[in-house]
Length: 123
Image 1 (cartoon, rainbow, N blue to C red):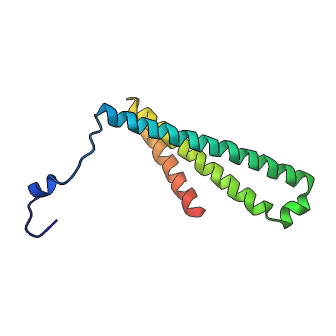
Image 2 (image 1 turned 90 degrees about the horizontal axis):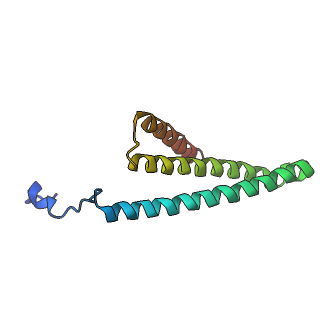
Image 3 (image 1 turned 90 degrees about the vertical axis):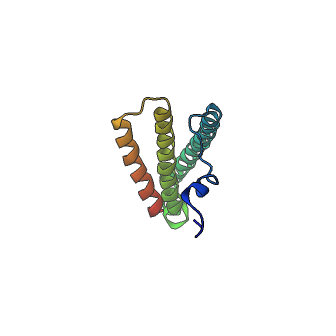
């Protein structure tokens, strides 16, 4: 805040997002659905890559361990965990926006968020 301004002067420049506005809620829901669809596509693609890598492991285990397949498998598994946690968090956000928000959902969302943060830090 500037030296000569008062809090009331500052408030007129602050734009507060109105969460009760139906247009804002619709835009948020649309973005969340698109984000969820991208996460689901990522889960499916990573599952396909993981299946191919496990097939390589079963058929040619020496090539799997000597090449770059082992680090790629670890990276794919961590990416799957991250995308699944994103999907769960977005789903909990939908549950809270539908008015079904309760303490169990809040506790689960907090725990999943902690796992997602730890997953991100360990990558």
